[in-house]
Image 1 (cartoon, each protein chain N blue to C red):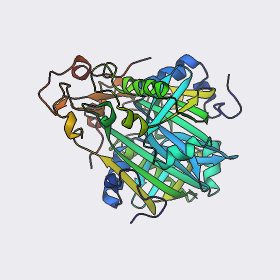
Image 2: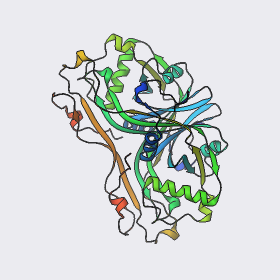
Image 3: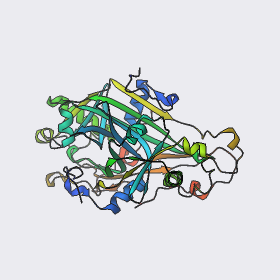
Image 4: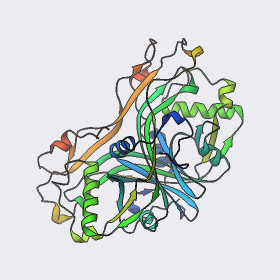
Length: 211
Length: 211
């Protein structure tokens, strides 16, 4: 259910409050943008996230100003956006973008328990490249100590989704202007090896999970 | 030059304050994330932008809460991020992302002059698909009226860039774990036509400008 703060007002038909939809966007998006206020100035910082059930993890260095601020429990907005295509209408006015975005409002808490931190780091690695945790060297205690993990509950969130063709006004439909959608996707190209070890399947055939 | 608010503190070697670098990121990024405060809550909203020299344009419906708030001249942070690749290190701890991000701090003003609004709309359309303005039906006076245009000066901005291979600790270099980079790029697939008009070259061979 939307709250007054997460209700989609512009294009309400694009609003979606289903956890399944929100989860799929958060899971497919590699990164999110974190908004917070520091000395009355809003900041928006891109970072990697990972969803674990009803929690969203953020991580980074203990010296990070963003993580230090967020760890104090200030209000935060976390937004993940997937660009799915360009919508070219006959009229400039009806040009649009196909996209899926999820907006999460809440407050973060620090994850301090060591096994919980290790689990969160596994979630982050697996969010980026499913299968990687089994192969890479696990964090040493000193590395675990040098990583801050925050968790934000997914209590207040909404999604906004536009799909489909351009929606021109009837009187423009016969205009001799190509109209349609150019689909877009974040796609991998050939991996660039840093050593001679065999290339794992998750790197050779990399792709984002689709909801 | 960085200001105390835009100086990159984490990984200062990734910080870049050259306008050329910042411009290239803003120009290549299709969308940005706009951060602002409404009733003490930060919000982060994805939207299309366009750079015009030393100005960054945002646009949308006059009813948009974000544009109404921003049009009053409140503090805003606009961040554009390009994800260039996944950096798979031998150790979990040194996994990273290759990316380029630009952060702009400032205050917006409304563009109200009609020719200036039309010019801003041209910038926005050309930012998304260079060449499209010449083909699509131009905005009617009523459509111009139904569009809010804001401009944010690019006075206070910084970029942060990571490139290159994983940087593992020396003692991990011999680990039998594939390491390297999986390059990523937002790429088009075949356009989906909404009418039978000839497909223009800018849609057939769509690509983002590379700085």
